[in-house]
Length: 97
Image 1 (cartoon, one colour):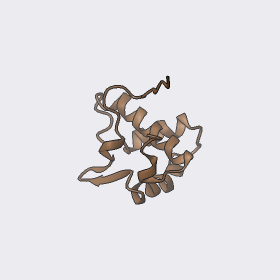
Image 2 (image 1 turned 120 degrees about the horizontal axis):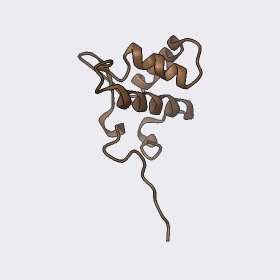
Image 3 (image 1 turned 90 degrees about the vertical axis):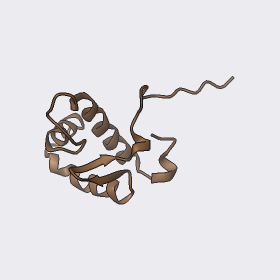
Image 4 (image 1 turned 30 degrees about the vertical axis):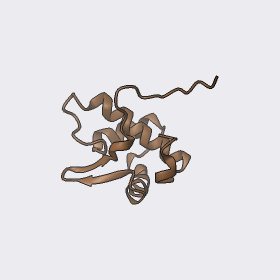
């Protein structure tokens, strides 16, 4: 995600929050508890993970992510921009020789 940040210009906190949403959504998407990465159940899990007392504290960050086009509006809420969603491996390691 950091490599693609030049396109989206996210702050370190926005990257942290977006990564938490992606991680939590990937953990819960097959349980039927959340059909969107930004569903209330996911927001509550992210807030707990990031030690925020109120999950509504995430709303300004979600708005900022939307404004920066890191998340996009879909029929049932928002989804993470496709190029930011991990496909298979969630980490890429470069080895310099």
